[in-house]
Image 1 (spheres, rainbow, N blue to C red):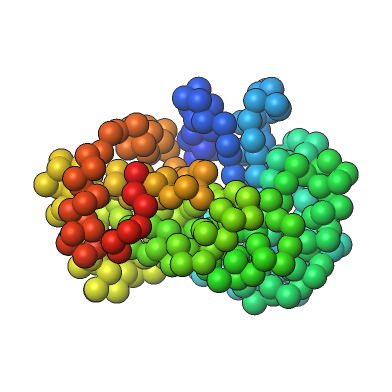
Image 2: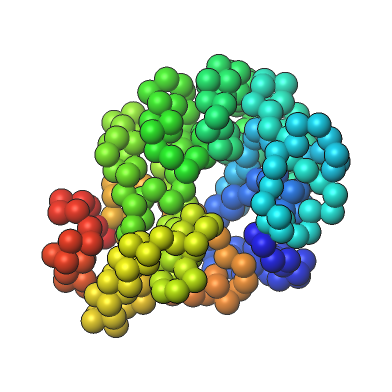
Length: 302
């Protein structure tokens, strides 16, 4: 997002992740407007298909610039889009077309998980039309499982209650700064046996680099959040722990969460993330964060 990534740099990230034992890769048509899927597929072309888990998303069709109904994008969000736009489509036909086009870009005959991608303003259609289509695709073997990927826990909880989803991907709502997924979604997923993947654990940057200019949910962070992130960093510093390390590990303390989905731009960022996950953090760190009022008491911690 917002900056080009060299082809070799992107494929090196995938190859290095596989070398280090990571086996779950997530992409979507929206990411780079097709570029992510093509690069991930190219990097996986010579890899034994059964050795990795691959997810992509449905709900957006990629079409030529100028196509009616194109989704408005923030200027510069996808600098390598090459005249392509995304068109929202959560219909049954749209879901099937989306998946078939993704399979072609990825160069595979199935994906393990298909997520309905951010249907915030189209939730009724996604539940009524996309879900039956995904159930059929699951029966046909073109996908192994399906879920919804969203930034808000309330609609995800509705999806878990009303559909046969296998998993959900919730972004930015179970972090050191925002635990709103804990109120209903995570207990519900535990009760129903629905898998949970958590993304956006750094809240788009503020939990890696708090301070002036920090971003939260891809926008300038409000001053109270910056101050809170800085206080979290101060507590972590007393234990010689980078704030990003605590932020990456925090969600794994919840029994409902099976996976952290991290976005990395380079092999160096991948190495930093793996170092953070591998580090043993003292229990007193979490006790002090709670004691300082920076996390609610009773919340599960690693």
